[in-house]
Amino acid sequence: MLIMNIDRELVEGACTNAVKDVIETMTGFNIDEHYKNDEEDHISTVEISGMMFIFGKRNAIFSLSMTKESAATIVAYMTGIPPFELEDEDLYDGVAELVNMITGRIKAQLINTEYYFDLTPPFTIVGKNHYIVHKSCVTNIFKKFIVENLEIDLKVYYLD
Amino acid sequence: MSPKLSSNEFTLMKKYIEEKCGISLGEEKAYLIESRLSRLLISSGLSSFSEFYSKIIKQDDKHMTEKIIDAITTNETSWFRDKIPWIILEEVLLPKYINQIRNGEKSKIRIWCAACSTGQEPYSIIMCIDHFLNKNGIKDITLDDFEILATDISSTVLQIAKMGRYDSISIMRGLDQTYKNKYFESQGRVWLIDEKIKNAVRFKAFNLQNSFLLLGKFDIVFCRYVMIYFSKEFKEEIVRKIAYALEDEGLLFIGSSELLNNKDDYFEKNYYQNSPYYRKR
Amino acid sequence: MKILSIDDSSIVRKIIRGAVETLGYELLEACDGIEGFLVLEKEYKNIGLILLDWNMPGMNGYEFLKKAKANNEYKKIPVMMVTTETEEGNIVKSIQAGAENYMIKPFTIEEMMKKILECLGNGC
Image 1 (cartoon, chains in turn blue, yellow, brown):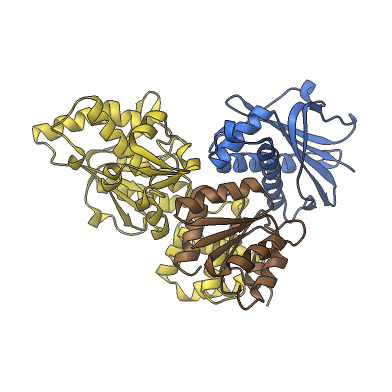
Image 2: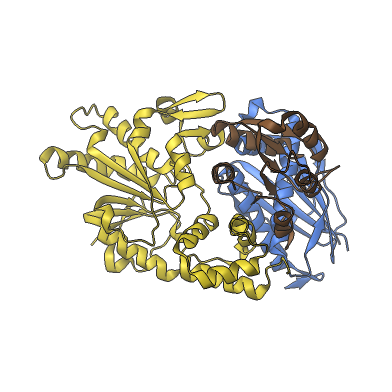
């Protein structure tokens, strides 16, 4: 189904597969997608967001957002280092690496489609309750994933 | 010579892998072929996948087939994975087996972990048995009354399994504090499993495409999360061979998310705490 | 014997440390190709394997690989690429530049240990 010229099923499917694959491989957690209602669509309040720009026939921004507590648990299971031994920089780097791997997996699934892309290095935005706000007419994909008491938001904002 | 694997060659490679190795590769795993087979490409002295494909088709080499299987399959595992098989072992099977050994009905309980990967599954079984014996104050039966055979196609993962050394990442996956404290000793980030547990498992390289006859008969077979890679035909063959490798009333445990295709011919599905396991017909 | 991990992510290097130390080896670290060469200069006689990321600022992994394989002292050290890079042809490109093995991120610790042993035990 094409909405705003995006094959939503194709891209969303690639996103879901990538998040599940990466989180399950790196942490051992079985993560599930949380099917949210439309009111959760435009604003997300989190503490750490890993981001990457992608360039191709369609340019976009990928973001992977979570609370600091979620980041600490995930990075702890990635590294085998208990959360209380992790520095803030470990969490920022961990989230950046996760978005890097997830975007890499998405890219691999979109080979030979018009959504194939190149990407920038990942970076991290940090701040308690930071908002990622966009105009309501921007085409975006928003997926929420849950494992136990952890929540992870994946967003794709198409720039054109 | 182009270094790229063309889509036609890729399709042919997928078909070869399915027919010769019994492994079915979904499209979402397609990109793994190049990375997983890169080492085999180099060690074959070739510089492109098209040459590699031509070589393996012409030579039909069983040894190469084993290497491809080893390269393509993922060695993901954890301690006490899915939990329920060990609950069944502790609450249903071990009490029965203890009685059978005491009555002289059985001299030894034989358990086979097919596709044991880096050893977490067979070691989990032995820890479960040892914990049960200690918890219930059983002194007349020991680990020597149990034989655990753990096999895998990869001699490299078997080498890792035999070491009995685990990093803190692996230790966090599925191992509760009781078992960790009782059976592991830490050296920095590395955890060493108790020698008694390590020595209770016999590791052996084995390809599931081979006959199971020489392995003997088993009371339990764990064949978990390996059949997910196989074609329908190969899965059915494995299920049939496992059935013949089991003693009467022998049991098969598969992964909690797996399904058995032709099970009704050979197995009866039972449930414990709403989780299935399979008893030989 | 030591293993050198060259990756701009400290988290990835921490994960690799778990695998390397469990196998009984010592890990050396560098955050990009330039630092990688500084470590190689001091330690190349002790290094049995290089685990190399592709996308790094400064000198990327592919540039490092070509330079290392062109150096008489470093070229014998086997290199395994450890990267998210799955671009069609890039895997073979790195093999043709001299990489002995290739691992795509994400990976399990078991996969990493297995591939390290394959590189060391069987000469990659």
